[in-house]
Image (tube, rainbow, N blue to C red; front, side):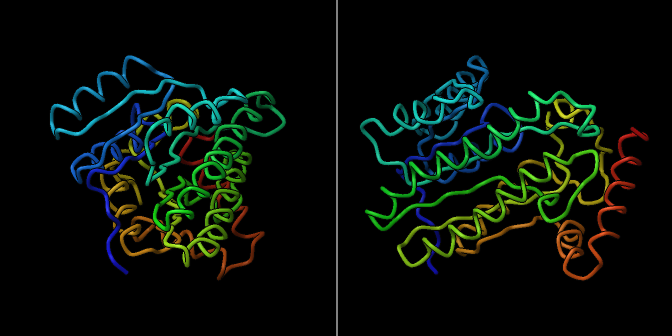
Length: 266
């Protein structure tokens, strides 16, 4: 399969103000792609857009929005696609929440599903038809290695990423004969603001921990090859394979034990 064509085309990146989303923005700008950057924090987006344009001579447009709002995905797509064709959608926006399901705020968990799953699904639904019509395009959906297994203490987050993984694999098969690539990116620990939002800790240099830049580059390499799933890092690939080899009840207990150790016993 030929490498994906980036230069002088447009990409929409959600969750672009920091972490993996910002790493995608830089990686795509180095490939000559014009960028539509979406996230809640307008000042960060504006600063990032200016830096990317100055560094790489591409167009970068900030589109502040909150994808937890029901109308936000539709409005974002309408603004992003007005007068331009979007050849790559990177669904990076999302967050996690640590704690027992029955002790965590229900509304926050429902908001997580709205951002991690519903907004992602709607943006896929708006992006794929025009991509298929012109026979070219790509979608990268941010999953997680925890999408391969249940994680007590991260129950809704892990379930939301299992949805992303399954949806992306099915869309890959539906789209691959039409010139459209769909990829689920499933990293393990990444040094970003995610842990602070989720209320968890991530030891620097821990097993399977990669930088946002490493994760973004692994995803784009997978997009070039047309594969359906990318799990960056050997330790993370082993964790993703474990549920196929071991009893599911054992996997569930072990993942809960490991999560408690990493989070200091919570």
